[in-house]
Structures are given as structure tokens and as C-alpha cells.
Length: 282
Image (cartoon, rainbow, N blue to C red):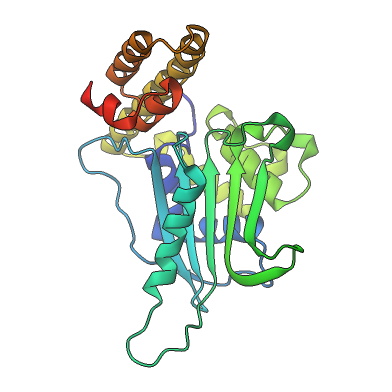
């Protein structure tokens, strides 16, 4: 059993960043990864989320929404599996805080800044030469000039993070190193001997939880590992299906097997070339 929890589970993610007692961890993380003109001084959760009471949350995505002292909207999400139209989905959900700012009566359409930070447990860049660990997306014109500062999105493709302890240069590197390797640490690395990380390690220590929370975490960890194994199987089977020159019967059989292992229908569709509707009917 690892000393520290896996932050890629819903339990781990929200223990670190989604609880009122650990709001300072979220604030420090956001200040490290976002392109801010001045540091965030204060945050309040828009809809504080509670951990599931009795069932394992098998969603591919879970998020935390909060608001800054000056009205800025922040959404931090952990996404466990690649989805169809991933970029469109990010834009769709980033539009929610825009719509929520609409006011009745006379309104001049002035919007408070909106930030989305997506921590991804997969690589969405398919072409290796274009892959980026850290991708900052904003609204710019054809000359690269800023069109609007209202919306900024940061995508962190965690499988691309490969820095060792002696290669870390700033707080962003340290947070990514912490998230990427947390479950494998036996002790706090020297480079992370800072008060904020001392608190983060304390919040992540498995034996600090009462038995009922330990059991809940174990259920989620099992689901995470099962989904990872199913995704890898689908990727391998999808490759084999491609070599089979697209035979529909083989694709259906692959889809049926991977669906039985719990992989989401949209991912099975992506791997096999079948439609999501066809996968749902299997």
C-alpha cells in the first residue's frame, strides 16, 4: 500500500484541492500554473462538492469551481480519459461561467475573467512533434495579438511531464512533479520541503484517514486502475483492429469485450471506428 493517495482519483483530487480546509493548496497551485497579472489572494468555492457517499464515481471528468476575490471564475478539472471532440468539450464547459455572468435589465456585457485548468491523465496531441506538456490557450487574432483577455485555458498533459527532482526550476514544476509522482513517494523529497507541500503531503497521507474513508478511497483506486487497464486494452485492440483492415465483425467483438471491462462508450467508439450509438446498443 502506498503511503500517499493517488491524485488522479476523484477522492484524491478533491481531498487536495476541493475542501475548504485545503483551499490554500488550490490557491497556490492556480498561482503557479495560470498566467496572472497579480497573484490570487482569495478564493471561495462556488459549489463545494462532497465526496460520494456510497458508490464509486466512474466519471471520466471531475472538477472544482471557485471564484476569486475580484470576481474571477476558476474551474480546475481532472480528466482521466480521452474523449471525442475534447477541445470542443473544453470550450463548451468554459462557456458556463460566461453565461452565468449575464444580468437582467440594463447590462453592458462586461465579463469577469474566466480560467480553466485541465489536468489530463492522457495525451491529446496525436502528433509527437507538436506535443506540449503545458498549453496556454487564449483568444487571439490572425497576427497573434490578444483579442480578449476574458477567457484563458491551461491544459496539462501529465504523461509528458518527465522532469526529475534536480531539474525542477519553479513552483509550476514542483506542483506537476508532486501530482505526477505523489503515489510513489515514500517520504517528502528535499525539493518539496516547503510549508505548502508539507500540508499537501499531510492531506494526501492514507493512514491519516478514518477506516470508512480508507475504504472509499480503495474502491475509487480500484475503479481507476480498472479503467486504465481497459483503456490500454482498447488502445491495443484498436491497433489490432486497424491491421484487420476495418472488418466490422472484429470491431464489434473488440467493442463488446472492452465495454464489458467498463470502458466508456465514447472511447470504445474512438478506438474501433464504430459509432457511439452502436457501442451503446451492444
